[in-house]
Image 1: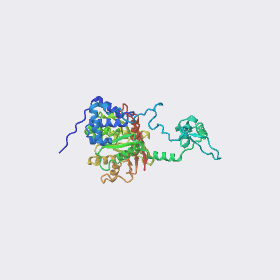
Image 2: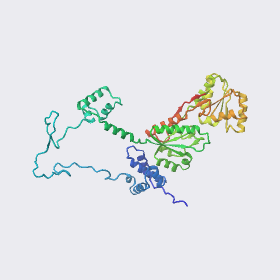
Image 3: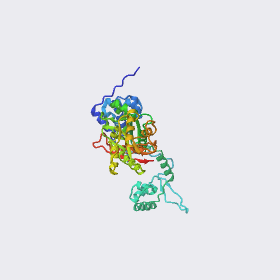
Image 4: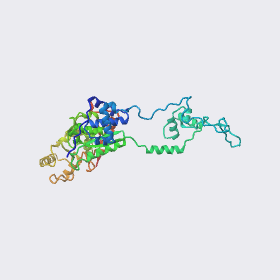
Length: 469
């Protein structure tokens, strides 16, 4: 039996805009940002338990601030007057403070203020010290800073010797140390080192990776490497990481993006996808910084980080020619060449033009290479062109050509893959970890500069691969 349906919290458009402003503002206290995220989560139809888990609080707190919002709106989320420690006023000179009353004089006790006397090393009495009289304070970092005319931070930098300070400032600080006789306290240093070691580093934000679940086993090696490189780089930059299914987000965009927002996500990474996708249907991308590490997103045009396919194809052709291959053939799917902006065929033709050779017929097939129709077409193309080297798109196509019994390639024919993924000995390593790390670095900079939504002019960052074999 299903439970009661969750009714979303009624939030006006003006309040929603103000809540989004509070969440994105760096000048708002963290507790107010958390309350705003609670209200946004409830407005998106999330349950109290889901909102509580996303914000790391109890369901009682979610109910409390939801009731405050219903009663007073946005102002109900702010701190009420009277919160926090009260300011103490200095006691009047005519009114003694609590506990400062005069002690009752005992019988025979003098009215004179008691005087303390200490003996000096030579046996003579030291100057009297009147009880209650202000003593000369011990030398500290602040007294050294006053004498040297610098800040206390500069004094600490000079004494630690770990920071660059000009020779003039260093000499002034060291002279001031000798003047006031300052000596660092080793116990205090150990205490501060202990406290700094226990300090928990705060996250800069959270990045969400929208992954596709349609990959076949063994075909997502490149995609997993890209995601792994991005996740490692995000952790180095101080960002949290979330992974969500792209299909579940796009099936109900309003609810899906509401969940992402309630989890405190500021940046979204779109990794390589199984097939070409159009993601322009939702207008909710404007709430996040977005980077695509693939050409698979046809629309909208996000900033991208992808391999340099043109340069990689040119490297393969030149390396094969350097090794004595004179008839280099190209066999790739049409959809793959179109996905990368025809960089493969363009670089292949440009190489032959640059070396003053005629461009051989290319085998651009539509469909799967395993089909009987495509296999027969490949056999005809191979018999007509007779290449001594074949450039293919991926490592699994290269392995299929070498091992398929119907193809029967000569043993002298070299098959080079444009994406070896560490599973083929000849071709290009596209460095997917580097691609993912570069995408995460770009996303971190966009979050820092609050660049959100679809850019007016998208940038494409290309990572050159390396030759293998």
